[in-house]
Image 1 (cartoon, rainbow, N blue to C red):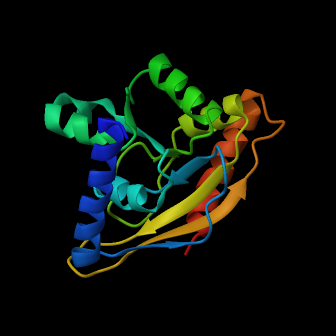
Image 2 (cartoon, helix red, strand yellow):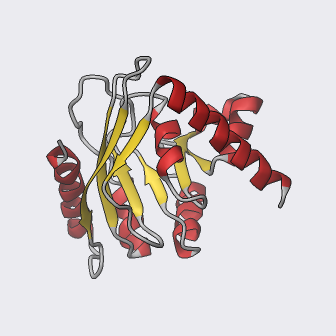
Length: 189
């Protein structure tokens, strides 16, 4: 086993222990097999940790580039499968990394709102998730995270609709897919 895999496994057990002690994570629904894009609401920096605990080992995460500015944080999130994205500009490196991960059969987690919102509402989505799903021709699994991240309060990750991106290609399709993803996240209760 490589050092990277050992450290990743250590991180999983470390976060799982913290989760069991302080905020147990429960996945409601069954994740698809193979490559897909998981689109979720985003309310806390802890969302990614909760999702990491319920995903397959080969999961990849798109994360804002500012998180990679601190060496230790960068090491931890990179080991967990994250790669940086510049949310303010078209980021071709993030796009290539996303498409390669999906082509290799890994699920990709994106928080398409682009920011954290603590009000419990699903806000306007950026079109990056739709663009990637269309380019890779993978389905989008919608879901929603329910938690206040208070000690001993469970975190629920509830899956919603699995949306096919097959045969969608145009910019009109991208806007429609973005609306369907938003509706799919909002429908989860």
